Length: 188
Image (cartoon, rainbow, N blue to C red; front, side):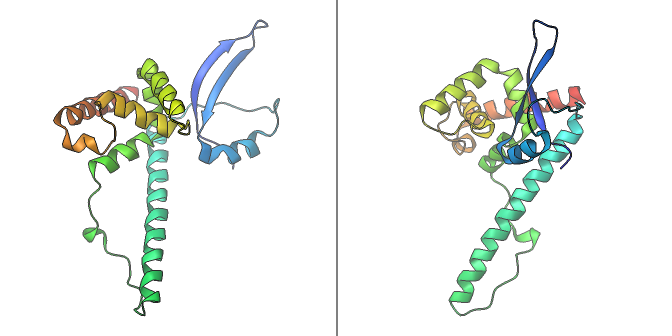
């Protein structure tokens, strides 16, 4: 591993003129970051990743997670079929797969590092409130969970599933994603 994706959070200048930069690394990449950085004082180089590269990275991670999930679900179904005495069936063709629900799309969007970064910077007070709410309920304070809470607060729902059945929440989600997509186009 020679690189780890991180989000820029804060920059400050110390008394002696040294620049201090704070980065957030997703929990799934923490072991790689520890391995890569070693101990404090290790020299590193910084490079900004284009929005296209970050978006492509997010898509690859989502596809990998979906493949793992599909493989795991298929394996469990195969094991059940074998235990019942029938032969395992092959995976269903893509044309037979169900389309992703709106709640699924919302969840995938909340899992995007690019979306989380945008939410942190475009809605900082809402991000802070969502983080506080998650902490009060004893939920883990991952950026994915805070992003999900931001969406629930912004859309006025208790669950992301409610967005598809509530016209107001659906409109709010549409405006949030339209603003995000416009930011992505402008940043490119």
